[in-house]
Amino acid sequence: MSGSSAGMSRLSLNTATTKALTLEQALRVAAEAGLTHVGLWRDRVEEVGLDAAVALVRASGLAVSTLCRGGFLTAADPAGVAHALADNRTAVEQAAALGTSELVLVVGGLPAGDTDLAGARGRVADRLADLVPFAREHGVRLALEPLHPMYVADRAVLSTLGQALDLAAPYAPAEVGVC
Image 1 (spheres, rainbow, N blue to C red):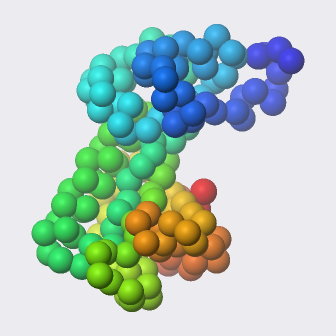
Image 2 (image 1 turned 180 degrees about the vertical axis):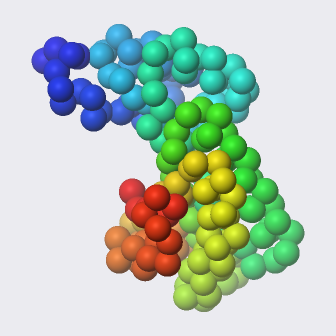
């Protein structure tokens, strides 16, 4: 199959699948394969620094489809909430600088010693309300990623598409979506 086929325009390489490569190498591989987009993980961006990552992406000729990941919004203590909000604002700024309008959110698991799943989801809803205006100002949509229920303790209190859609429902599709 040729990299110029119309179907390739919808394909994006997620850098989580290229852990053995540097960001520069992953971008080169994607471009050489005829891809037009790459989904970046924040750890790969932070390895080289945001300015260098932006320059590498521009030099590659690729567009950034998504930045992964923000989230981890379930903290119940004030310090944890402040840290999560600050980190997510940084992620929104990184997404905007990289030219993507999508920030993938893995919303976070249950805090240590907590078994209140509904309460944790409620905190996610509260944190979304805090983050949406900031993301909107930066032209970034928050994309909720539900994960398998086995991750509820440490990564994601959203386990179903329905739960994610319920959290996204109060917002315009351009502000909060589901991936």
